Image (tube, rainbow, N blue to C red; front, side):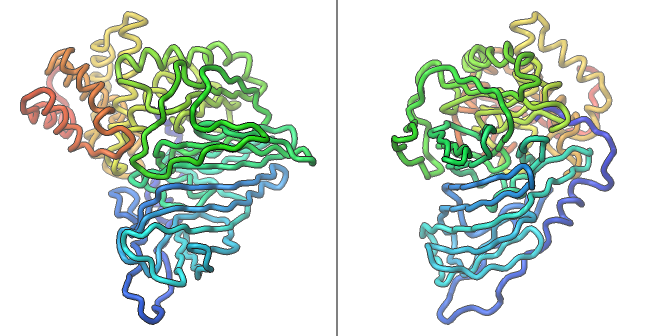
Amino acid sequence: MTQRNRTGAAAGGLAAALTALALLAGGCTEATGGVRGTPGSAGLRDPYFPKLGNGGYDVRHYALTLAYDPRTGRLDGTAEITARATQDLSAFNLDLSGLTVDRASVDDAPAAVNRAGNELTLRPSEEIREGAAFKATVTYGGVPESITDADGSEEGWLRTDDGAVAVGEPAGSMTWFPGNHHPSDKAAYELTLTVPAGLEGLSNGVRTARRTAADGRVTTEWHTTEPMASYLATVAIGHFVTDETGGKDETGRKDETGSASPPATAKTSRPVPVPVPIPVLTAAEPSVAAASATLRGEIPQILDRQAKRFGPYPFSTAGAIVTEDGTLGYALETQSRPVFPAASFDRTTLVHELAHQWFGNSVTPASWRDLWLNEGFATYAEWLYTEEYEHVPARTHFERAFAQDANWAFPPADPPTAENLFDPPVYQRGAMVLHKLRETVGDRTFDEILRGWPAKYRHANATTADFTAYAESVAGRDLDALWDVWLFGGEKPDRP
């Protein structure tokens, strides 16, 4: 994500806003005879969003079937969630904000449903044993609500004049589908999206089908076979101008009469071999399509340059979605297809969001406290790009960042509250940590770390402790003095 502009328009902190939404789940208290399991926890005790996510199971695959009417703002959906129980379960929770649940089932048998705030509790007719795979199906609908964050920016399902754009960092994805909405629970996705005649419906991953019904409505199918955190899922609906280039994917692309091979459902799935160049699908609203066309066309070249520094591109497809200004106040690294407001669609921001495909999307933070592993790396990718292609040394960016007092408000690895997650230290001081690491271990070792880190944790979750341990293992030395000052330290050093 590009750093959000703080406006002070919203009262209170992000943590308070989300806590008000995420009330403690209610649930059935009477167990059926013979049940030995217990309910999965309502929340994963994230340091900033303790009620986000749920315990007791591990999602492997989401199959989302959505239909949207821009005239009324109504969204109708069915979510089929394939998961594995990590304990004996008598009940389990899903995160869902707003929207009305019509019915739910577990393994095709009706399940009891309870709602309390953002917690949706399902109680299956039979206990789910630890280690067992199960499928939860939820049918729901209504007018999705957005979430206003403490800095005045909005996330979730955002209505536009002719459609909608859905973005979800950190919690907005729960406004349009039920799930385990914490970054630690990544899964594969299959999304089927139906929109009115004349509109385009876009999402992450590979578009495997596009068909038009007799009434003109358009249905598209999208597969994301590599694991994805829910906050990186996106939907964009509108009069988009699209452009698709590059090699044909190998994930089972189909036409209206063909059939697609099923998506991978295991978290440990790896992307199939990808032709070079990979498929690149970009979309822009008509008013900004011409102005953004040249830069959209540069995406394959930028990815190729980044792959030389960071290792192979981790996904089966790439692209971008460019919206009119006013829809979204920031760019977001939605997996394989970042979303940009037109005013932020410049080369620096594009480099930043594409770098996130390695740092944040493939290697995903284990908790929101580890967000600097996303933003510090993506910011440093900007510095590397200007160093190589604009002849501005990374050291110059480092010294400028060092001089700015705002970057020393708190350590990048320990934001004080949820509302500070997108503040300058996470981005700029996070990048400063990496530059000091580079100067300490030398370019050759640093390049090894830069490529090896996303390879070691490809399509997995990682913590700050994982990174510091990995860097020290590659460097072959203790780096506590560096971490103590630049990553965890509260005081600004005397000199850069």
